[in-house]
Structures are given as C-alpha cells and as structure tokens.
Image (cartoon, rainbow, N blue to C red):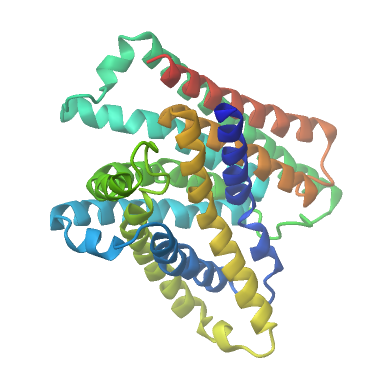
Length: 359
C-alpha cells in the first residue's frame, strides 16, 4: 500500500510539473519575459516561504542560524539551476510542451546522476560514488547505458523536430500551437536547461543541514513517526532565491531591450486574467515539490523516486502536447518519429532508475 501511495503522489507531482506551462498559454498580449517573471515571483519568492510557514514552525530561525558558507553554496546552485529553469521556459517556447519537455527532462534526469559522480572523482567524499566507481560497477554501467540511450532519444526527437518543420513548410501551414517554433535554437537551450536543471539536486544536498535541523525538530515532537515529510521546504527557499535572481535579471534585460515594461500595466490586455494565469502557472510549478517529497517518503529510494517523477512529467507533458495539437498537420512518419524518440527517452530514464535501485 505504501508503494501505491508513493506512485500516486509522484503522479500528482509529475502532473503539476508537466502541466504548469499550460496556464501561460492563456496569457494574452504580454511578451514571454513578462508573464514568465510574474509566474516566477510566485514560484520562487511567494509560495516557497508560505509552504515553509505552513509546514515548518520557526523555519526563519533555521535559516538565520545556518552557516553563511552553506547558505551561499545553496544559493549558488540555485542560481545555476535558475539558468536551467529560464532555458526550460525558452525550450518549451521554441519547441512546444511535448518536444521541449522530453529533451530537457531526459537530460536532467540522466545528468543528475552523472555530474555528481564526476565531481566526486576530483573531490572524494565518504559515502559518495565517483565516476570511476560507476565504470567498475553493474549499477554504474546501467546508468551510463541509460545516458547513451537518452542521447539517442534526443537525436531522434531532434530529427522529428526537423521533419515537423519541413512538413509544415511544405504544406504552407504555420504551427497552430507554437508560432515561435525554432528547432535549432530550441535544441540548444533545451540541452543547456537539461544539464543545469540538475543543479537543483546539488542545492538540496548543499543545504542539507537546514533540512536535517527541520527534521530533528519535527521528530522531537512526533516520536516514532518516521522522517519529516516536508523537511526540504526550508532549503527550497534559499535555492529558489538563487533561481529568482538569474531569471529576474534576464527578464528585466528583455523587458528593457524589447520595451515591454508596459505589459504589467497595459489596460488594453486582460490584466487581471494575465496575472491570475501567471500566478496559477507559478504556483502549480511549486506544487511538484510537495508531492515529490511525499512520494519519496513512501517509496524510500531517492534516486528511483526522482527517475519515476521525471518519467511521469515526460508522459504528462506529451499528453498535453497531443491535446494542444502541437503535432497537427504533420505526416504520420513525423509523428511516429517523435513518439519513438520520446519512448526512447522514457526507457533511458527507467534504465537509470533501475541502475540506481541495484546499488
């Protein structure tokens, strides 16, 4: 029963993450940078401390008592992850929900398993697996196999994107769901996003002292009830401050360059609806962490939980892609190619998850 609840929680979290971009499509008359940062204010500034306040009494005291170096490192990884989050939005903007999300999340899940191990080759740490350990173990070889398969899936998806572009041009049609579709630029930003998005996990690790303190406080008042479900909520605050910083700087630059500061008060647009849909998108994005933590507490395997979470996001994002008719007007061969590419990415994610489960 615990496993069933764990899978359900991960599905809900995956649904939230795979669906968060949909409300943005309801925003009218605003430039991308305007609605992205409004949603980001909710994702990274307003909702995280609200979540911590609701779940962790005295969370501000925990942050205040934490070593400055830990806070700085956690913030730094959050800033790097923020670039990944920023390029995620651009990847979905240029490739669509289906293709963009599949490439980014496939890379994120696999590189999240690879990058730390390379780091620990140069900076060995007790209890942490290095890249050399992976090369010389069955579980590590499975993870590396998953990486190779993921790259193949991304190549296939890239091929499908090129075929889509040719099909639409040949038919004299514009993409009905994504008028800003750009396969080349979209692939570049998606790859960057997939790699840097893995920094969120590093931020959680860097700020683990805060989570541990929240966990100990909770366990002292709830003896015999296991680990605290929401211990990472205090760490999220610092990580997301870093993410807010990089996204805010870039969006303000775009507002200035594109002369779109007027979006926020333009009465010729449905201002209230734009703010509501942007807020909904941002809040939905954060909800994935609530349910991810709940799912992990039930399944009891962090690595496998992360992989399962990613797989659900990819599935949900592609279901939305089909529902939004992102692949309408293309040939059957093109649609079959993107389905094959997405299936390969999902298989790679599951292989990585299996590799981590047999450590």
